[in-house]
Amino acid sequence: MTESLLEAVGLRRSFTHPSGDIEVLRGLELRVGAGELVTVSGRSGSGKSALLALLCGFDSPDSGCVLLDGVPISGAPPWHTCAVLPQALGLANELTIAENVALPLRLRSDVPRPSPAAIHERVTELLGELGIGELGDRYPLEVSFGQQQRVALARAVAGRPRVLLTDEPTAHLDAGSTPRVLRLLRRCASEGAAVIVATHDDEVHRIADRRVRLLDGVLTALLD
Ligand SMILES: Nc1ncnc2c1ncn2[C@@H]1O[C@H](COP(=O)(O)OP(=O)(O)OP(=O)(O)O)[C@@H](O)[C@H]1O
Ligand SMILES: [Mg+2]
Image (cartoon, rainbow, N blue to C red; front, side, top):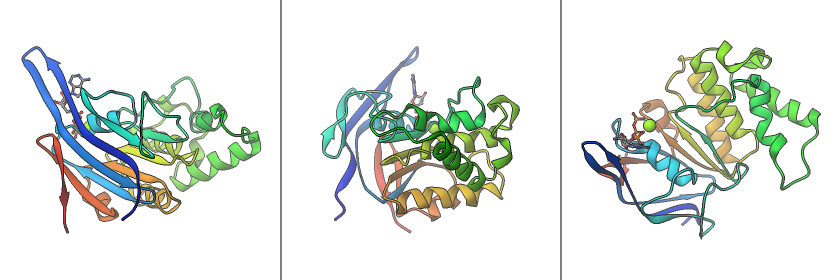
């Protein structure tokens, strides 16, 4: 069996609302190996985004833990280890699209920083691959939401993270753009990343190595 790169053990997470507490995750378990692409489905409000926030360390569980290489994370791991395409994108609107995608490469501190030419090459490659090669000099608010979503995906992928978490990566795309995104996600996995994709989209489920469904706070395996 593949060694787990990312592991969720007994994750519990409740949220307080005026109408009372809701327990969204109820002892959830998940193991994902390097090179594996796993899709997570589940109705709206089932907790997919809440799960991804715990897996990337943006949020903390009430109990249980997330392990990376068998070691519990505390807070968010470095972006080059675990990168995220959040559902709300979180682009820096004051930076151009090319600058947004380059940001993780510029900020990386663990390796000699790539040269400006190497960064430019990587950014150009990714934007082209995602069909938005002509938008690099624009600002996020000057392009469509579906285009912004691909920018946020390029930013997540740019530094070749070991774990890639993507939340509804095809939710705002036209039919022509979806295959580009799927090809990129598959390539990240084939290059060795553990890729987790929260999605309602059957086309995404089709490229998965494994599919799970979030229901009543736990994951169950989905068979073909
Ligand atoms: N920060 C928060 N504060 C309060 N409640 C929250 C918070 N985050 C999530 N929730 C609640 O947790 C539940 C799950 O939300 P989540 O966003 O994870 O669902 P989802 O499965 O991603 O839905 P969708 O498919 O619509 O994106 C919802 O009932 C939501 O209201
Ligand atoms: Mg969500």
